[in-house]
Image (cartoon, rainbow, N blue to C red; front, side, top):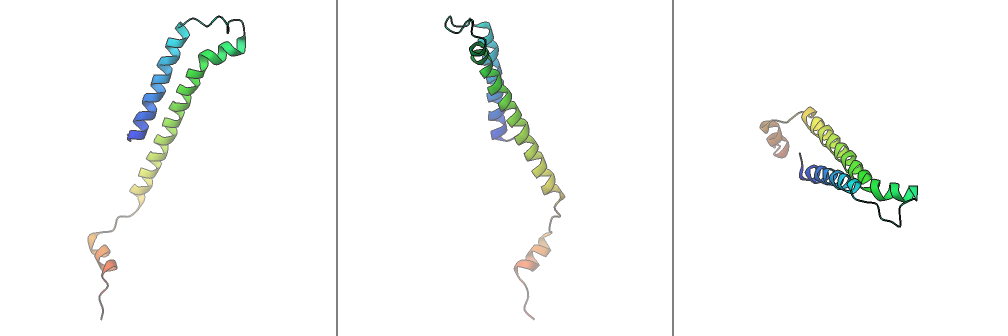
Length: 90
């Protein structure tokens, strides 16, 4: 796992923990009774968490695809690389 993936995964888990803590917290009085403001107030952390986890999955799949492409490429041996870099003059 790359450092970028670790940070994104940690952020996603952190946002989900904040969302759980926020659900247990009381809703402010000025927001109570307005359905859409209550939804936004509580579930914005959930959306941040899910967005982070989806981006983590996307970046992980890109990394795996790149690793598979590198594994499929034929590796040149040392002699063929040396021959290409130093062609002999006849």
